[in-house]
Every structure is written in C-alpha cells, then in structure tokens.
Image (cartoon, rainbow, N blue to C red; front, top):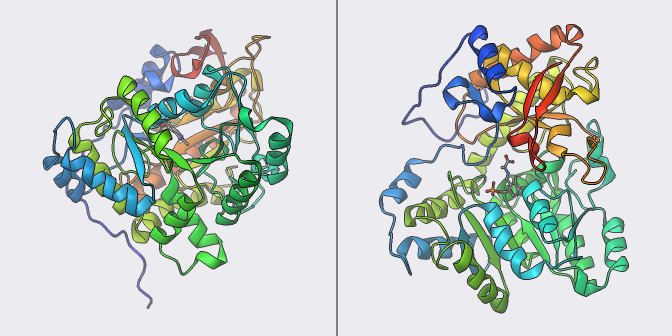
Length: 458
Ligand code: F0G
C-alpha cells in the first residue's frame, strides 16, 4: 500500500478551547450587537476570523524567541533576519515594521502623492486605505475570471495586462508610483498569481518605466500554487520559486503575520538604496530605529526562522491541504463556495446559500452569525458591511460577491476541527429555506464600519 501523506510536525503544547451552549451563544452575540469582532475569544470554539498572527510557532521559533537580542541598534536578531531577507527573498535592503500596514505606511509616505494612481490586482483593504488616505486612487486590474466564483481559472489573482496598459497609457508616468501585485490575492479569495503573469507585468511595467512592488503577505502560498499549477515549475524547490518571483519586483511590503509564521511583524524590502534611506527616515518616525522597526529583537529572530520554515514544501503542503480539505467537504455537501479553493481560506457564497435573505439585510453577516450560534465557529463577513457606504450618496455599496470567509490559522487546528466546521455549515444549509430575514444596522462608524458596527435581527 502506498503510505499516506501526513503532517511534517507533531504537537508539543496544547491550548484549551471552550465549548459553549447554543443558548449562551445566542445571548452573547445579541449582547454584542451581532458583531463577531466584539466577542471575547473564550466565547469562540474554533476561530476562523483570520489567519493573521493566529498561527502556531515551531519549537525552533520559540528557541529564537529565547535567544532574541534586544539591543536597540545592530541586534544579532536583526542581522539574522537580514541574512534571510537577502538570501531567501533576494532583497539587499529592508526595514522591519510592526505589521504589514505599517510597511505600507512607510513606503507610501515616500512614494504616493495626491492624485496618483496605483494599479494592481485587488488591493487589500489597508493598502487601499493607505492609498486613498493620501488622496490617490487604487485601480483594480484583476482578470475578469476572478469575479465568477465557479470559474476554475488556476490563477485568479492574475493582473489583466490590457487593463494595466490602459492605466499606463491614461496617466503620465510621474503619476504612477508603482504597480502592486498582491500574492496571493486576499481580496479575490486567496487566489494565486502565476509566474508568467508576474513576468509579463514586470515586462510591461518596465516598458512604461513603472516600478513593481509586491504585497507579499502570502508569498509562500503563492509559490506553492506556482509549483502545483505551472508546468515549468513543478521540479523547482519552493525557495527557488520564491527567489524568482521576487526577482521581478523592485520591492515588497509584507505582513509577516501570515507566511512569516509569527504573531506580529512586517517587512518592507527594496533594491534601491536611495529609496531605502528615505524610507528609513520615515520608519524612524513611525516605527523605530531601522534595525528593529517597532518589534522586539525576539520577534525579528522568530520571523527569520519563520521565513525559512514557510518556504519548505512539506509545511506548505500541510497548510494548503487543510484549506482544501475544508473546501472539498463543503463542496461535497453542496454548499456554494468560491472555486478553486484559495490558499488561506474558504469563501462561502452567501448569496447562493441564504437565497431568501435580501441583500439589504446583509446575507453574509447573517450567515456568519448563524454559524456562530450553531457551533461557536467564528468567520468573517467579506461583503456589504466590509464594503462601507458610498462616500457621496451614503448608500450601501453592494460588492459583486457577498462572502463568508473561513480563514484557517497555520499549524493550529486539526482535521477533526475542520469536520466540525463543515458539519455546522451543513446543518445551516439543510435549514436554509427557514432563514428568511437578516440584520439591520443600529449603529455604524463612518469608515471601516464592520469592526465596530452594531446590528439587530430584522
Ligand atoms: N496585505 C494583505 C494581502 C493582507 O491580507 C493584510 C492583512 C495586510 C496587507 C495588512 O497586514 O494586518 O499585518 O497590517 N490581512 C488580515 C486578514 C488582517 O485578516 O486578511 P497587517
């Protein structure tokens, strides 16, 4: 018999999680205004709110924590991280930052000016936020296939080269500070970008003299999909693929809370020394000295080790297999999800799940609340609440897709936990016809309302 595949790690430490009763959960979520962000974590059994900073570190990372060098300047932990950024990612210059959006803030403070345009595949919320905060515009040039959840295109994070060239033609070069490629593309469902597309974007951008930056939060997962789905790369190692991917970039921002395998941290990398010096000054103002950037020495050391681990194939196989396992279970139950299954999360299509809940009553949030009440599982709405109101009309903006994201933390939950999540969703799916009303807003903030919104049952 061929031996089955199994995880390349075993568990050394466990953390208790708490099961509650349906009555308790109904009371708690009502008290918290039907907002899952308001819940205390001990009221959640399985937490799929995010895969950001929620993963388990390895024994080697914990060993690095113990050996962290807390020197203000020139810490040994910084030097370790520099070695990894140079050799594994291939960038000569970098700044640590406290998380991904901090790297965006530092870089954009230097490069993004009022009325600039920043094209890319679907920008992540904070990236878009940092662009718009500077009165510049984020232009989504993702391929159309990405918006059809049943289209099985293997690289739905790809940039449409025609759309990108239109942007390059419509604006003078001075108004386009860079093109941003998000790998994998979180906003389109954890979908990867192919190496061919990265190369093409680089070649096109070179012709117009526009730099290319990566939003590299999930760069290792992207490399895994390239190896799996792009023929020329099946015999390459993940580290070789990562090095090649990054070779087409002038720089990157990274939330290290994802593929850095740490609970906090970010990076900003670049090739240009002048840009590094300018960003360094900005980093000092916002983050801290250039060799620690808002992080403790131990955080830098754990990140260096995390980057080495996340770029190994057995780790990535175990990681992506969990996401696919949950996705495939849901598909087997007939539950509509975005396909192909993404790298870090399963996205449930709430419009085709709760067909009787009107869009004005927030079906994805309604489904997220139903799932919590049913099982104590916490997901997150990626839909109308997240999309905020139109700044001018103050009307709800209805995005093309109304999704419930179930993000899987790295090396954290077991396959039994995923069975539990799938069973809970199936129970709701079986009684979906009975769910005919959703939620209405009691209070909301002007922007980023989903974090603090208060809702009640319609
Ligand atoms: N870019 C991408 C693609 C992200 O997914 C995130 C965070 C960031 C940048 C910002 O990084 O949180 O370290 O400041 N995504 C988290 C999520 C919050 O749940 O998807 P950060």
